[in-house]
Image (cartoon, rainbow, N blue to C red):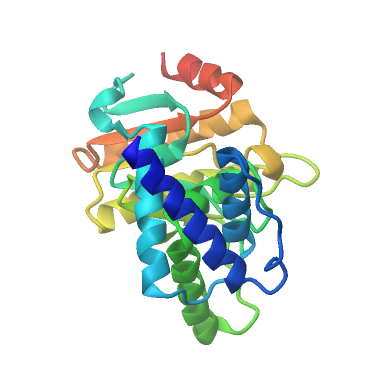
Length: 268
């Protein structure tokens, strides 16, 4: 009970500070119920542009998100059964996984999702990592724009690694997957395969031994789910054969029942 009271105090404090930090939403009404308050805080975090926040606010945010992670339930690698070799399938919220890295399906701006309460993985990861993640992404993009020009956007299949901050994972690898506009082409299939290869290469370069892949490019990027799963499994298995002992565990994280079925059929 005491812990719940402390958490509610943190929530109220953060709502006050994030409201004060916002020009557009400084007068927003705060509901009385806990879930309503959580939704408003998440929304204020979602729409906030990358900028500095005082250390005292960040400290409370980190404490709040640490408790939220415990409430959701942290899933360790030992909790996830192996399907084949050192490959696993896990269905659920990727922000619960305690691994060396989780993969975020990002957009080319690399700043996360600004739509309040959106249920995309980009929004989930940025919400529960905390506002430091957007700031780090912004810092990295500014450096790249100095190098490549003001209109630089992150290319498809080129990963970016960041700290994971308040997530149980240690790192987030952000990737822009291919977008299927009219029809699926061999070039788009190759780009999706490149996403998986380049992420695993980044893991190797950074001595990361465990990674969870989301279903890259499915959903709003319109890559057919079954074909995406086939490419993901084929690419990862080939890489693991070429790089024996490089990874302790590769996890295909799925959210939808249909994707889980595809991965299970392919890996059986």
